[in-house]
Every structure is written in structure tokens, then in C-alpha cells.
Length: 295
Ligand code: NAD
Image (cartoon, rainbow, N blue to C red; front, side, top):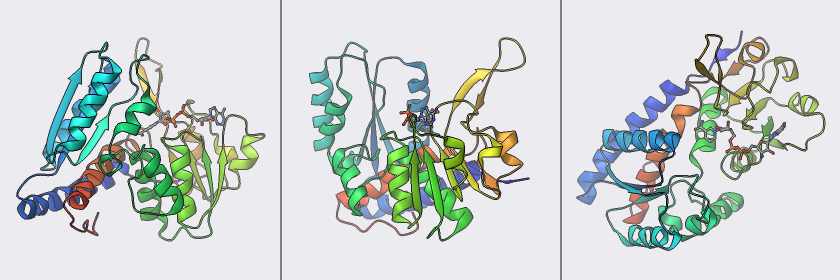
């Protein structure tokens, strides 16, 4: 049986380190590090994410600034708010919760965020910095996956890594991070031929597809380390109930893999913990301090 990679425990440890360093930052800077979160509209899942981000930001000893705008907010008004947050010295990180309502151009909004406050790492400047190996901000979910992999495996150099999914938010930055760790990286996607054969190469497999239990145990190389990013809600056996599953068939994969992240409790808790870490790093850089190495 594969070992469980406990993302929940790792995320708790990271949040603890962030809290300690946030207190040290506040003592040195004379103010708390600050994260502004902007939510447009009333998407229920987004409301939950934003609430959790706010709570965890405050619990880590940082300032949380929440901006809730109605769904019909014009794009120009949202861009003006982003402009004010860019200029606000109390705000170190800015996160605009996606998805945005259809009448707003997401790329235009992301482009308006100052790259030095873009703690989600979605701005093209930060994507470019990641691609060329400069310090910037890396999207939280893939960076969390990398932390779990390094914690489990140590040096990743020379390992075969297969990333399934090529989104800007998870798949592409994940592949860049693994390449920077000197893995031999394959990116598989919806047009990949014979996915099972490709996945079998992987000493590391990261699944970020959004298809419940798609990756089967028999696709895996025995002993592989499997990171399941997927969060899919499916009908449970009890009528009327739902349950969360990943993109990997957990039972099948556990019989073959060396280690695997569960869903829930694997990658999920890492995302906000890394967001807090990125915000604290932004706060240090914004006032010319070196970010703490323990993060
Ligand atoms: P996305 O829809 O933007 O991208 C999915 C990718 O999967 C695409 O690049 C597509 O090419 C690929 N794909 C689709 N069908 C495929 C197939 N049959 N075979 C191979 N590849 C296929 O999704 P995303 O934003 O990257 O998210 C992926 C999953 O991760 C979702 O389940 C999402 O909920 C989850 N997610 C979790 C977190 C977290 O905090 N844990 C964060 C972001 C996303």
C-alpha cells in the first residue's frame, strides 16, 4: 500500500512558520503584512474560498482586506479598485477571485495587478519570471504540490515527471517548477495519445485534469509518487449525498504507487497556506527586506 502524503499536516506546519514570520515582520515594519481579496458576484464556491482565505489570513497574524462587489460591476470599476489596491501601501498582495462574471475580461484584470503584488502568480510577468528562473510569484497550487514532492522525495533531479493538464493555473507552472528541479518533464493533455503509456513513465505523476478518478492504478509505474490536484464532487452511494474525489482512482492507485495525496486532505489545504506564504514574501520585498528563508 502506498504511503499517504499528508498535505493537511504539511499545510498546518507551513501556516505555523508563516505566523511566526508574520509576527517578526509586523515588529520590524510597524504594520502587518496585508492581503486584499476581491470577489465579484455570488458564486457559492468562490464565497467559501474567499471566507476561508480571510479567516486564515487573520489567523496567521496578517491583515485581510475583503472587497465584495456585485455581479454586475462594470469592468472599469473593478480595474479602478485594482489600481487603488496597487497604490495602497497597506496591501502587499492582491487576489481577484476567479472565475469573474462573463462581461469582465479576466486577462485584463490580471494584467492590471502589479506583478509585485500578484501573490496568485497569474500575471504574465510572473509566468515569464518562472519560465526564465527569476524570483517572482508562483501559482499557489502547483507550488504547494512541489513542496509536498520535495518533502517526500528530497532531490528531484533526474526523475521522470508526468504532469497531466496544461492550464495556466496548475499544469503549466507545475511543469516549469519540475523542470527547474531538473526533472525530465512530460506534459500530457486532452489530445495526448495513449495517456496510460505516457503516465507509466512517471516516477512522479501530477494529475490536474478535473475528471473524477480518471487516472487508473494500472497506468502507474510501481512505486511512483502521485499528486492528485483534482477536486471533483460526485454522487455518493447514499442517495442525495455527494462526495469529493480526485482525478486519480485512489483505491487502485494506492495499490501500485509508493506515495499518494488523498482527496480531500492532500493538495487542497496547501493552496491557501502557500497564498499566505506568498503574501508574506511580497510584504518583505515591498519594503526592501529579504524574505525569510524558512518559508
Ligand atoms: P482546467 O480545466 O483549466 O484544465 C484541465 C486540463 O486537463 C486541460 O489542460 C486539459 O488539456 C486536460 N485534460 C482534459 N481532459 C483530459 C483528458 N481526458 N486527458 C488528459 N488531459 C485532459 O483545470 P485546472 O484549473 O487546471 O484544474 C484541474 C483540476 O484541479 C480541477 O479538478 C480543479 O478543481 C482542481 N484544482 C484544485 C486546486 C486545489 O486547490 N487543490 C486548485 C486549482 C484546481
